[in-house]
Amino acid sequence: MIQRIVITPGEPAGIGPDICIQMAQQPPANTELVIVADPTLMAERARQLGLPVVINDFSASTAPHATEPGNLSLLPVPLCANCTTGIIDPANAPYVLETLTRAVTLCQQKICDAYVTGPVHKGVINEAGVPFSGHTEFLAQLCQRDLTVMMLATEGLRVALATTHLPLSEVPAAITRELLGNIISILNTDLRDKFAINNPNILVCGLNPHAGEGGHLGREEIEIIEPVLNKKRQEGICLTGPLPADTLFTDKYLADADAVLAMYHDQGLPVLKFKGFGRATNITLGLPIIRTSVDHGTALDLAGSGTANSSSLYYAIDTARMMADKWRRSRETNNPQTSG
Image 1 (cartoon, rainbow, N blue to C red):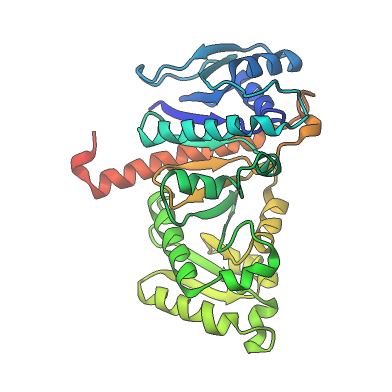
Image 2 (image 1 turned 90 degrees about the vertical axis):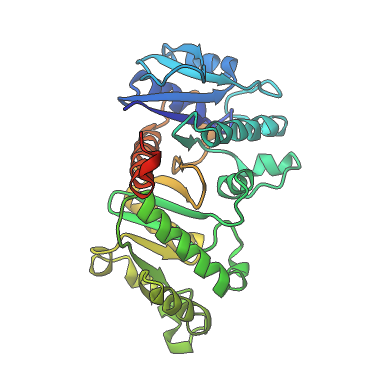
């Protein structure tokens, strides 16, 4: 089965275009890759890299076909301003957001099976006057979802987040019983439907050191986290915790875990990136589409140099393909009349 995956390179001055062109030299098998980008940008970056690439116009009316080496199927979106490799320009922020919007539409219309994002530069988008805290929140808005869950995954470890891009001082107030309960429900549902895990075992971090140490180091575990976990256990969700984050990430606990739920960004992600940087993918759960992403930033200093590593892009594509296949099978099982 040929799967059609749409990709946005992200920040045009960064390494997003580079890794797409590098990947086109040896594209994944049985996959049609659709790049949403400015064709002149992609052609110029290929010239800088010294890599041959044939850019073909994407047609949504044709059946999916595997991308051949040295080719890019491209849905054109024009840059708003000339792009200099390695130098960000707020004038191109609307271009970046338009590529994201077009890619989501392709998935919503079921023209593409999944969506893979390259790295964006949050700062330059905000400098352009557009409030932007990240892909996760922007895609939730596009898909009209009040809540999504950010999860990073690498071989042997998945880490989801209760809060994402917040100042540390704002995290405790943000973790409410309602929020935590909804996040656990989304995490459990998508692990079942999009990863085909029948009864996910989820480990939950405490917020405070030593998971609050019985209230001596904070009461969030007692007053918020534990009551939510008890309620969700009664709904049949398999949860362990709250556990101290400094001991949770050991083989004793992780051996039988399907995912870890961390309370904030830098509680769980340093461990995951230490374990699998360059071989990890960022996944947005709770969307009506499948979205994965590379696990790195724009690396402006590497753009156009030929030294960017495309391994995370390959991993993100492989993860998106796997999730799309499992989600399709899940829907066919639950709704046999829709199969075929």
